[in-house]
Length: 226
Ligand SMILES: Nc1nc2c(ncn2[C@@H]2O[C@H](COP(=O)(O)OP(=O)(O)OP(=O)(O)O)[C@@H](O)[C@H]2O)c(=O)[nH]1
Image 1 (tube, protein in one colour):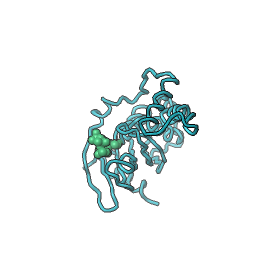
Image 2 (image 1 turned 120 degrees about the vertical axis):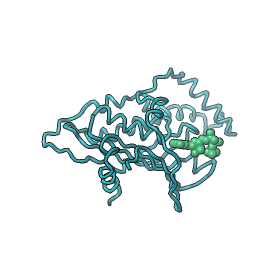
Image 3 (image 1 turned 90 degrees about the vertical axis):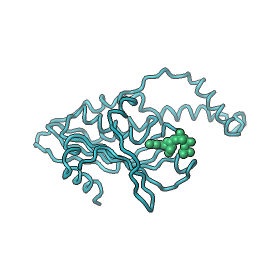
Image 4 (image 1 turned 180 degrees about the vertical axis):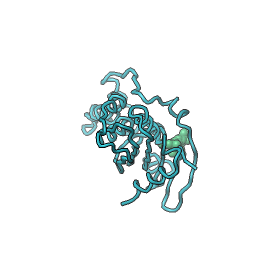
């Protein structure tokens, strides 16, 4: 049976399937395009950081923290730069594959950082992305760029996985797209349940990867073989 989307949390001792999701429902709440929200001013952002410094129990007026609000505001623009970028634009540039190559193209272990939308804490992971070309191919770097665009936003891992697959599927129109993400969530490691080293795996398959179990198996073989 073809698996369309599943999530598992892996610890050193167990693999447990926890829940399934339908991509349409996910994308309904999280549109793939950039979220254009009015931004506060730089001053307002810095004031908010000062409040959080006080909330942490420190003194924003002590010397070591004086420039921190400015640094944090600047860092946030970098960490969340994905809101200003469009995956459709980046993926719009495709190439005709003159050799007639139509087998799987797979880029594996692409490292990324994101932040969970629940606690705004880091997610550190790697993504493996494959597609089955149908006439046109993508520049390989564009696959990594799409991960950056969606990764540099507040995310759930499920949404990130679905958005990457959907963006490639819609713009390139290949015979199928497969995305596998393995990630560690600092909100589960540094706080809360404090399970260091636990990894969450999510997948999203479209087209032949969804309907053809052999293609899906080949994806996992190529993704895992070292
Ligand atoms: N499905 C999913 N859950 C996530 C992701 N990132 C963080 N979470 C979870 O989001 C949930 C938020 O749960 P809440 O009960 O609202 O928040 P909380 O009290 O801080 O929860 P704890 O982390 O259990 O202390 C937690 O279970 C997190 O582990 C993600 O990418 N996908």
